[in-house]
Image (cartoon, rainbow, N blue to C red; front, side):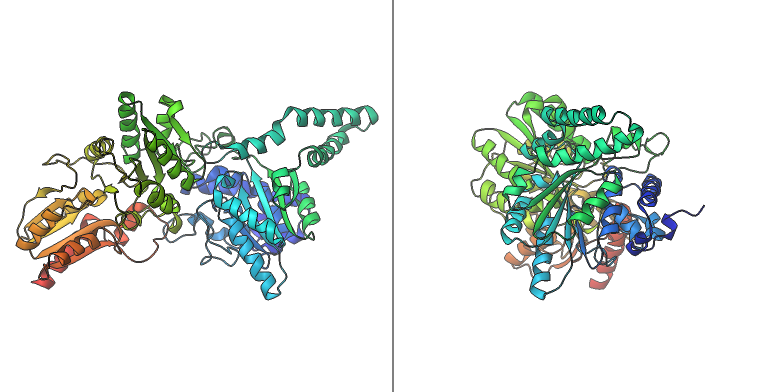
Length: 624
């Protein structure tokens, strides 16, 4: 028999199916997602949770005329399968393949690029406003998770949308689970709606009444009771907080019953003003391992479908793992050390700290701005907070870093995981700007470890500096180098001595730079290799001394070239009027890297040992 999914090339094809066929289609889609992600890796649990919801939305609404925006976007796989990309679905998150997130450049049904949380309501309101200003007629929908509502931007948008009164539909996908378990009063409030004693008792009473009144109905009683259950939800658990913000609240609605979903969306389609439809889903729905462990399967490597276990288990040490273990070790000796994350306890390694020191660990939800200022408040009162956030997400708290931490010179330690090239997730997740957005802020110290030993020493040093500190490292295996000098604030170390040219490298680029030096030596080029260690304060004396004795300098960094490490070296040379020095800056260009394996992207941008060698050799030959 031909699969239903084979016949779906656009959402228009859904319109010819009945509800029973939609249910079968949803099962086929779920199987396709599990099969593909088991081979490519990806965000499994979030996508399995919204299969029926996505099918129902595309069945009722008329995209791309109607605008559908996915908050964060890591739950868009069903959307991609239904919008003409099923033939390329096997390339998901692969270099040159389709993105794991909505991407306007990829398809007309992706109306807004998303990758960070809490942005969908703001962008949806902007589209609704533009629609009305232009006199157009279409629906605008934002699908936002309960976890994204912990971000302040979502509430700012809700407040504005309620005030404006524009036709706008917010679909709240409530799965009671973010990447890490949800935190906060709002999450508790939403969960109480479904699990509260009053609601459960009322639901049971309704079913009992129907059973007593109609004892001979038989199997049909389940459907009647379920409809009554949905009705009673609206009566006893209205979304008071949303109503007060100016929204008409509908729900909660079971998110895995396509019939209910279709009926609900058809009913509200003609309603005016801002609406919030509350949908209850189960993260990982339909795949038992993901249902039982949605955190592990939120973002997963390729896995065996039958066992649920990773196809290959890499036991290599990573920067994340070393950091987590060292922080626990230091915290055992110092009770003032606290750890803070923004819904990324597992990804940042802080789950280990939380296990050992639950009273000293704080997951603030997807609220990076709050995390930073919260840490500042702790630091004012003598504690030593460590804020561990992915580099790309710390961008969201730039003002708080400046205004609440650095102006007051508070000893908050920022640990930036996933700094540099981030594999698979694409432009929205690349951590390639932190050198540039941190180094110009007064009072902060910025360092980048080249290996395991330096990471440990830098973390240890950070706790005694009594000033803001940032430590950045990539999502990568960790290596060991032979260091020739101890770690001192603002001091670099010489790893190789040479006279023809100098390579100044920092962080993750020290190792490939070292390998490139060996290749250059084979070409009879004598290289001085420096591990800079600190972006700020930068070792001016080392740069100046090299500039006076060696007239060819190459800088290597895993950051955009604009405003990064190479720019800092160039500024020192310019300040000292060392105009006769020829400088080659190697790093990432002025563009957003696509998705793909880290190794492939580093190769693309010539930041492997071979790429560095070839560029330096060309530079040496061209400059004589």
